Image 1 (cartoon, rainbow, N blue to C red):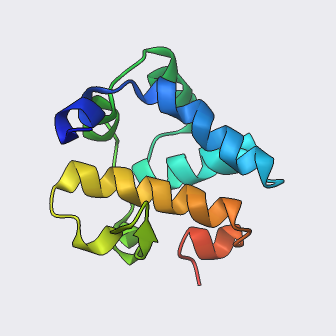
Image 2 (image 1 turned 45 degrees about the vertical axis):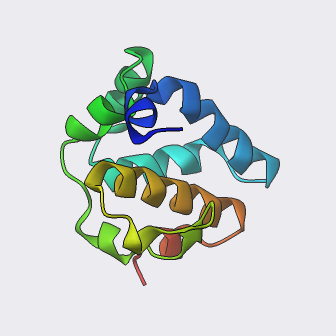
Length: 117
């Protein structure tokens, strides 16, 4: 799938997959929301408004109040791609989000996922 198709994909279409992945591994939708709010600076209410508005991934990240400064600490491999080597800024943010949800599903503590320790 091309970058452009991914960027224009509705975030609301992918969000349930993030929640399902977390719940399947005994985590919660609230933890997914916490990760999303931490990453983007959205309040919980703003996050759910973006989901309800069916915004694209591109709009979701463009309208984010402020990306967390520790986002650069999100490294590793997701879907066979090393996150820190992704050059396109928007694709990097999408991969970082994927990595954070993967870490949640793998049982990491929220403190470590949110790069607080």
